[in-house]
Image (cartoon, rainbow, N blue to C red; front, side):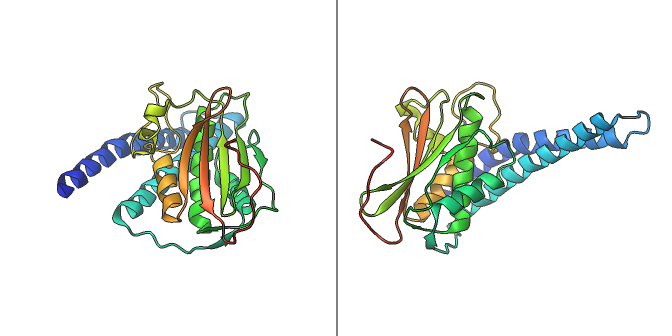
Length: 242
């Protein structure tokens, strides 16, 4: 029943959190302890390296905690939406700015001439950031992630996040949106914490009346599509799905 489901979720959260919070915490603790040690005279480069580790791992912790809080709000139905017209190019720019990893490799084609979408700007920014972060996790270093937005029909705008990673088999596509799932068993740690990034993104997009779709990138990889309602319908032109 509902209680068993709630307990199973709580168990999954605890198992996931114990790993995803402890790992960055251990790195922060080790770096700080090294810096505070009176037995070693560290070089300026070493000090810089410890400080960088502390900053990067603190960003990771922040991401894990944010996604956990977001997932709790979604599970509890406690999401307070502030819907209004939002410019997709502003959201993508803010999402890229919020990521702690290197985003120079992300190729963006989001015209500012696109119609605005009906969304909560803060929630849409989090959703877009999570999906781009996920795409970067799976992309080979020499194959940039592409972020494109196009009008679809007369009532939607699609934001496509295109990666050249290993791809997701059709049978796995629903599973990658389940909390605490990580696609593939490569030993690579998901940077967005407890596999919650995509679950949160889809929850937010659906709460705003949109949908999230997964398709193959032609030539290999995954294309995630965040399809949102336009705030004012006008005639559309093209779709990145074609």
